[in-house]
Each structure stands twice: as C-alpha cells, then as structure tokens.
Length: 249
Image (cartoon, rainbow, N blue to C red; front, side, top):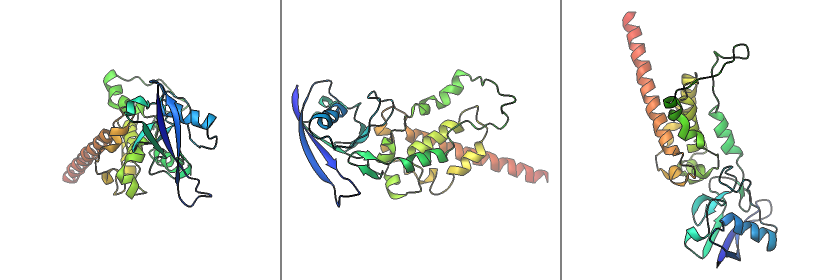
C-alpha cells in the first residue's frame, strides 16, 4: 500500500470560465487502478466529480482519459505501474468537454458512421439471405481491426484531428479498411469515394501516435497505410482497365 496524490481537472463549460485542478490523496494497493482511485474519491471525498465508465475490464472503452499526459483507459491503468506518487487526470483532447473528465463523442461517432461500418452486399436481401462462409485467411485480413472498442484514445492522440475538423480520424479510417477488405463486402468503389479526398485518408501524416495508445493492439496507423495502398493499387487497376478499353475502341 502507498499514498498517492490524484490531481483532477475540473471544468464545467456551462458555468466555468477556465479549468481548475483539485487534489486528493488516496491509498492504493498493487491492484488499484486509476478508475478505482477516482471512484473512491467520488464516493467518499467529492461526489461532484464527473467521469464516464462502465465495464471496468477494458472492453467498453468508456473510461478513456488523459492520465499523466497520455490517453489511457482508467480501468486498465494501474496506479503502481505509473511509477509515480502523483497522477494527473484530464479529459481526452480533441473532444468537447461535457464536464470534468467526461467528453462528448457525438462527432467521433458521426465520423465512424460516415464510413458505413457494416457489410454492404446488394446481391443479398431477405428473399435469398444465406450464411457467408469465409476461409481462415480471409478472416485474418480484417480480424485485427475488428478488435476496436471505440474508446477514442487514438482520436485524442492524433495531431491531424487536432488541426482538421473534417479529418475522419484514425479509428474511422481503420474501420473503413476493415470493411473494405472483408470478402463479404461488395462496395469497394463506394467506400473508396468516401475517403479519397484531401481531408480523408491522404490527410494522415503517419505520426503513429494513434497506434501507440491503442489498448487493444488494433494499430489504426497500419489500417490507414493499408487503405492507402489499396486505394493506389485499385486506382492503377481501374486506369489499366480504362486504357485497355480505349485501345479496343
């Protein structure tokens, strides 16, 4: 057991002009997470602290926050592993603040939805619905990117998101690749049109910060690079087909 100091950024945009920082002292065991410490503070010291959490097992992605300057899941970050007696908790960057550590994900989810994150196959409808059989190697193509829990850590760490509000963000682009490469999906051209512009996949500067903070090893930076490679390859293929068609004429 050890005593640790928890510093929490407090800010309510409806009433506060600027943020303030409140300090609390708690006792931490080796298994105590940052979320445990914050919930103890909320239950026994200051009931007014606002934060978001749910599963407490790094599956829902609800408790993302900036912990000692790095986007992390509070339920997955142990106090002892931080190696310091002072822990500073702030809301995730690149998200509007609702209050204290709780942020607004409306724009984040809107960008995710704009990627059409579901299988598109017009050949299948209710009248001829059937089971899709995939080979193991076909599943491997997208499996890694399907582990995304939409925690927003990659979005908050992305320097491009901070400077371009139209940029979809690493989460959305990686999910675009996840569905694009799925053998069951039949909307390649439609999907590529969504991201093929100067605010889309080409806006990424490949800082790699998105992948470094991902708690599930999704590696969205890899997804973006694969999406770029697919887009370039697909473009060359279409150009080649067009050239062959012109020669025939």
